Image (cartoon, rainbow, N blue to C red):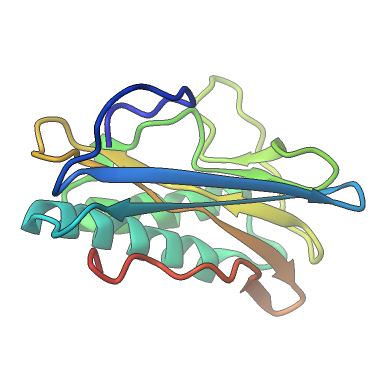
Length: 171
């Protein structure tokens, strides 16, 4: 994956290249948003390691979500898992999750990188798109991995509502 952009280019995708696909939809006034990184052909060991770190970080964020915790707590769980892989300093984004509903990208944000970012206590019924992105420069075929899932906070935790599979070749 080249540095993430939302613009089409004339780049030819080659064996070993990573590709990020971001899906958005709207139904009855509500938005959906998921994303997957896939590989063309066979990934390198480093691409697999980064993918595993992002996947485990995403799972840690989902596991941390429940009523009473804050968006900051969820971000800390995601970052801690990435740090266990030595990749905590490689997050690339203004945030690692966002609210979603009547807007495709709305507050509260998770892991917002702006000064004065709001700390918000999670409540049952809140819906988020968690989308950790780790970018490691210099990896052949690309070292940028982002996975995005929609998650609803429930009375006793959180439930992933995205149903798209992950890239088996990278797991």
